[in-house]
Length: 121
Image 1 (cartoon, helix red, strand yellow):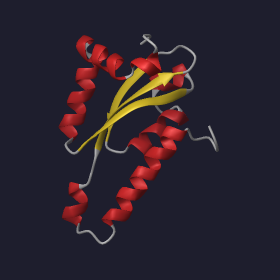
Image 2: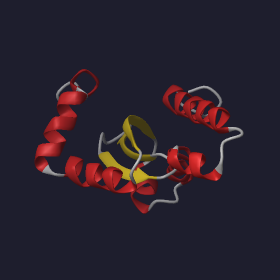
Image 3: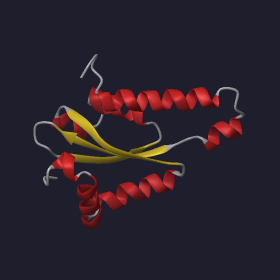
Image 4: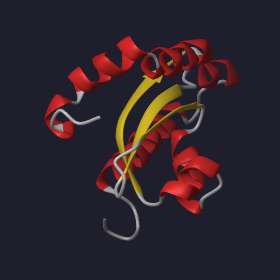
């Protein structure tokens, strides 16, 4: 990590900045269309536990986790963002969170991250 931010978080911030730049001069309706919702997975460095979440502002939510605003993340220490997906509809992000928390969803996620997880999830 450089300057306290992981490369993945820096990439996410750059993506959000590019989206904001594209929206400059857009009407309120156009800006609302571009609103994204996220499903994300954190992996804790010490115990390798996974945390599944969804949010309308991934950058803000990751900073909240980093500050320890979440009881689960504050108890488990440092983490890496290992996966996220973006959705236009909030309900789709919530459905993804519910699905990936299920047994079959965890298997699918392990398949998507097989190289990173090395068979351990």
